[in-house]
Length: 183
Image 1: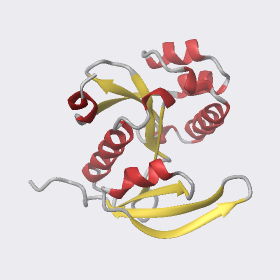
Image 2: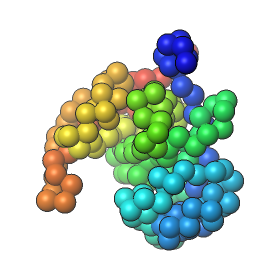
Image 3: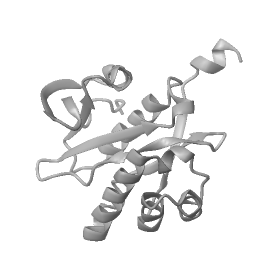
Image 4: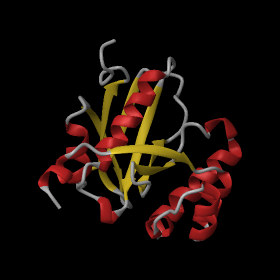
């Protein structure tokens, strides 16, 4: 593979993971989740951590169906159509207009630019929403790859939080329109 192919910017599109797909994935049913999503999801979508997250998101949708446009979606590489991860917001904007991003790249596709592509698409979406003022990212202090990913997007560290289970995480924010191209 040429260096040019490795260094070219990646492009992704998002495919909704509806309540049925999320519940199937939370239950470890990769075939059912893939069928509901309409794309072939990777085995990573049913690992223990993913199953917990997808269960949490399914419960979130059951309580508030209006959150559907905001939460986790499958990230599909363009133009080849391969699912390379998932990304979305933790929910709709809060009262202050803050949304929090989340993204995961399937292990076989890491360090190829897909996290940057997902984050760029999420920031574009946030900037296009009139009620969104700020985008937040909470990243584990030991997650050097994700810390490097956000570095080029203007995020400022605004705090930290932690607990015994997850350890220390840094909280970053950026104005929603900071990465929007001038019109």
